[in-house]
Amino acid sequence: MSDIIIKIENLSKRYGKLLVLDNLNLEVYNGEIIGLLGPNGAGKTTTLKLIAGLARPYTGKIMIKNKQGELQNAFENSKNLIEMGFLIDIPQFLNTTPYRLLKYINNIRNYPKDKIKDRINYLLNQFDLIDWKYKKVKTFSKGMIQKLGFIAAIIHDPEIIILDEPQTGMDPNARVKVRESIKSLQEEGKTIFLSSHMLYEIGEICDKIALINHGLIVGFDSIENLSQLVKTKELICEIINPITPEKVEPLIKKMNSYLKPYLETDLEKMSYNEKIIYDPQKSQFRIYYNGLKEIKGEILNILVNEFKLDFTINSYSELRTSQLEQLYFQMISENETPTKTKY
Image 1: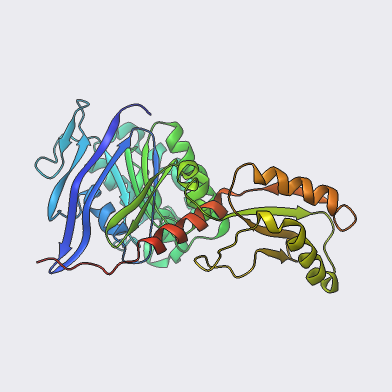
Image 2: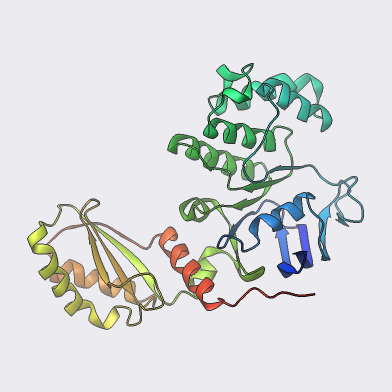
């Protein structure tokens, strides 16, 4: 990941008098997976459509690498750009078959004709659609259509892949396959934009996240770097044997007493009203502490030594998903201003 493959400069978009994107600036390097996060209507899909060339900006430009390795203004000249594939919103297909659809895409993308059949079979088999190769798309479920849309986005082996909510409607097994496929594509050197409401998926596969709210990027960096801004962090303490219901309340009261100096004091801004929560289904405590790096070890030391008669710890961690969730709520709430209307 050394050279810039996409550069967004002062990008704005409006529909009538509504300003949807406001002066976006972003640099993306080759081989990165960028996750877009934000509330509904924040501008995520609009951003992806602009990068994919499916919409034109109100102001600004998007520079994309061309086949000579130079950045080129995609709106002034869309010829000779490196290959791009995209899945935007819920895909809609004509009532054709997967084979005919994917063959058509590869033909117009000038994919080597002698490799088209093997490429189609490989991806249909990977996503459990090989038996539906010649079946009409109208007979497909929502999840199957979504899988076909994902395949259509990558069938021609593009260097840039744009995915808007790629796992919508998929079952857990299909979501895992998509996640594994995205990581595999990155290993091949692909650059990927991913928009999703599934924070777990974003946290697991993205190198960086761009937080968008009211058309503005309110944060852009790696999860690790952005997490340094999180005021409240969450520890997950999983125990071996579950706590009986009658012991939960007094035990949490005892934990609050011992851990009081390290717990978060201001949770009103977050979506939590307890500092220590016990999940009986997972046999784990969720502990919201003040986020100081050195405190994590202090809390573990107290739990091991002062609560050895109450429970035995099986695992103790600070999950990326937890950090991302708190980061999302914190940064979005700090930038809650009404959408501006410009004329």
